[in-house]
Length: 237
Image (tube, rainbow, N blue to C red; front, side, top):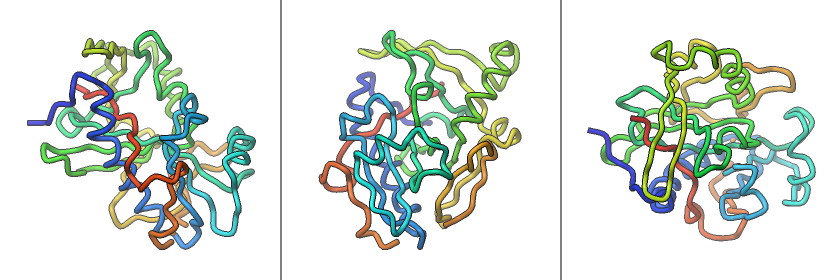
């Protein structure tokens, strides 16, 4: 049986969010081309952008100010890659990712995110990571626009409303195998390392592997790594 997230979304952030952040940072820091990995989830300047981690290429000196100036540029015109981390406690059973459309009357986090990639992890009942996926944000959004008319008429794209305490959420349940077959998502293995990006205008989900010692992991707000909570995906049931 999958574990259930709390009905209070704030508790979910604390309990589940750091699991995916630490895991992604570990993978990115293996790359000899990674200079630093910044944890931005505690930085209020990035709340509206829904970015959790930023991977800065080795040899590049980037301040938060530089990142805020350059984040809208194509990935091949800036020396960093942006990731939004999502943890899901039911997807291992349902095989669906949860794409949030609206939450408490606000635009869903996956719609407003400026991340280049969603790093989406499936947890088992013991909070162990069983599966990891890298999802191309731009290609996912473009694909959804082309398939919106199929919502609830095909098994791989369903709508759902969740009424949890302090958290009313409208979302889409999207089958992960369908996204893989459409070249929107790809499997990430624990031994993988690298700079995982799409070039400007290239919407493929694959990218060149490019990795550093763990001391390069530096939370942007100077707190110990993993302390600040991320935003887990609603349990997809």
